[in-house]
Amino acid sequence: MAGFQISEVQQQIVKVSDGKENLSFIDRLNEWVVDMSPVSIKSKVIFYRLLSTMINAGVSLIKAMNILSNQFEDAKMKKVCSVILSRIEKGMSLSDALQEYPDVFSEAELGMISSGEVSGRLNAVLVDLADRVESGAKIAGKIKGAMIYPLVIIIILVAVVTTVMIMVIPKLKDTFEKGGAKLPATTQMLIDGSDFITGDTMGIPNGALIILGFVGIVMAIRFWKKTPEGLFYWDNIMLHVPVFGDMSRKLVLLQFCQSLSSLVSSGVSITKTLQITSQVVGNEVYRRRILLIGEDVKQGIPIADNIRENNTMFPIMLTSMIDIGEKTAQLSKVCLKVADFYQDELDTMVKTLSSLMEPIIIVLIGGVVGFIVTAIMAPIMQMSEVASNG
Image (cartoon, rainbow, N blue to C red; front, side, top):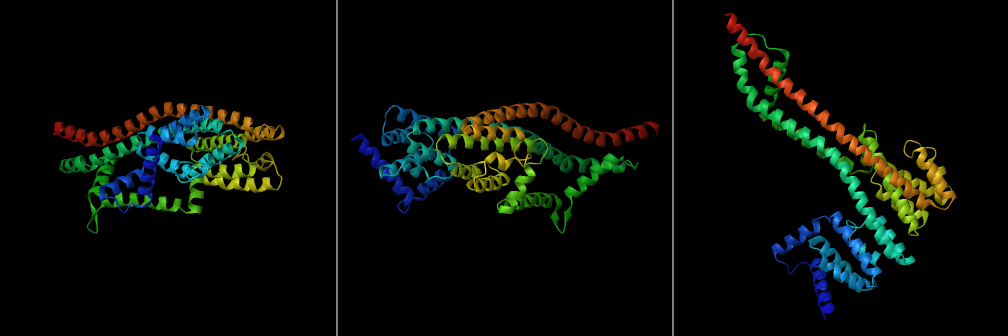
């Protein structure tokens, strides 16, 4: 009876999500917020691990999804589980039901789950997915943290300098001009910058024009990135940025190796594996190259022979390891070892970068503060000297 009640609740939830004509404005707003909310990595990991544990314990898929739908406090994940349950009850397989949420479950994850269902290895595949999602989130979080830290400091520094230029320098300008003496170059630069920011062009404050120009450039880049060629050139530029480009390349290769290892071990064909992998590496340059590799593999050309010609995108070590894996029919295990290597490399790079960033940022802040203090104090010292001599 309890199972029937839960099933009835799930059907009601699905009806609400499919047709919202009976909802109030507040309910519609809540539904919209839930739909737009992302599913956290933690929720996905819990979903895979608990589902694997219950299947391994002999719990039916429907009952397992019933339990999961009541397990999560995350509103989006609770709804996802409810919708998946309703579709499984209608006779869909787990992989087909998960396709309802492509924003939550990637194509690689769906491919692995589908192969796990066919091969009877669904439990092992779910455990592998949980480990992979968790590992990928950790390394991506470390890289984002390493990139965001200096960006936040620079934004704060720009905000402070702008405040000084708008609030402080104009008040000191009159004092400096009354002194009559020629101002030092640094002071004049500071005053000119302040005059420009606080001035206007055709009745529009220059400060507002600067902000609008910056926002316009950001929006233009975002629009450009949404075009196929724009995304390709942007990702290509990101691969050649000093330090961060090398990190991005290693992250792509890590995802490439992890995807190859997981999909091949799950029984997915090599051509389908390459097609799925091209979508999950997160870089348009590599996506196009991997698709070309897939086309050549269809013609009987091994992966190693295909990537051997491009040592920039695929290092010699990776090519050699893939060659060994293909010749020994151990491609999955070899790629897993290479993925571990790249993960260790990325961990080391992130730690090194974080250590280097602190002194660089301290020097940057000290240089900017020193320049402003010198520019302000120099004319004051001149005025004091003139007054004492007079």
